[in-house]
Length: 384
Ligand SMILES: Cc1ncc(COP(=O)(O)O)c(C=O)c1O
Image (cartoon, rainbow, N blue to C red; front, side, top):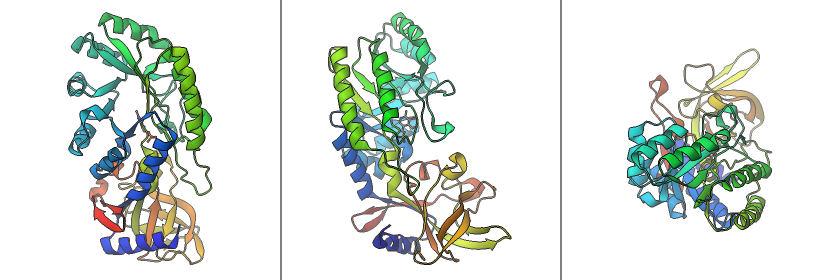
């Protein structure tokens, strides 16, 4: 990381106090523009489950994205952030009739997740158009918790139930005008995306009334230092080709969309924490910090890797340490046996790539308050 950025993070941690989340608005904008440039003609919706801070939602909306939501709470936040209903979509499993009906009545496009949801929709809104989320068995992702297709996934209507889906639609005179798929999260492989899109295109040929197809999100980022980036440029070129092929086969134009979450915000976020304790055991050195899994649960929940930088002491000799939080759980560890510049009490560590599924998954477990969030906008740091 360049020296200027490191010093800015160090000064910010000292000035604002720790723990604190910092987002760089420039990085979010760059990511939005990169996707828009490489996926022309495809509608983009930000899956705001990755980070629901209203300022971040607004920023991404202003870059030309719609907002994808998964709960009435997220709809409320998007609404408060000024996002028009026509730019909001909704996908959610296991919701009850009241919730589903209320979302549909707001005029939000819903991707129905089960045959039961189709039945409820039909009873309440016969004769209307619907979009459905399918499970086409192309699950992918870095951890079983984030694979959202295949026999073990709770999401979508299984490919084997398409006849039942059509029968239900007929029963309530529903027109299936949209299909949706989301195979998983943090995918770095172009061929996997193409395989999923091909599967959706093949299935789409069975639905004559389509107006749109949604490929979901899942674009990954390199969390580990030497990990290869997802090649968005190549992905864009290949997708353009398959889309043109599909349109030819289908016989008319329809709309296509993606709903990325992580890709837009993950790399923009840092969690700044302070070293509060150093414990040298016979075989391990534990570095204790003033944050924990209540603020960033990804390492404990998914075994996720986050780079950690000692902003106070970057030039010093590296040491193998285990960085642990202040929560009363042995799983409360940010990094195990990690080489970082020798930490001392009071140093400010920057946990990187935490803009997605970081603050939004935080809690007050152990009755420790959540950190505040700030954004770097040009050269100013503003509370958001
Ligand atoms: C339906 C749906 N769309 C989009 C996303 C965004 O995924 P990601 O953050 O991996 O892009 C998710 C996340 O799991 C999702 O469930």
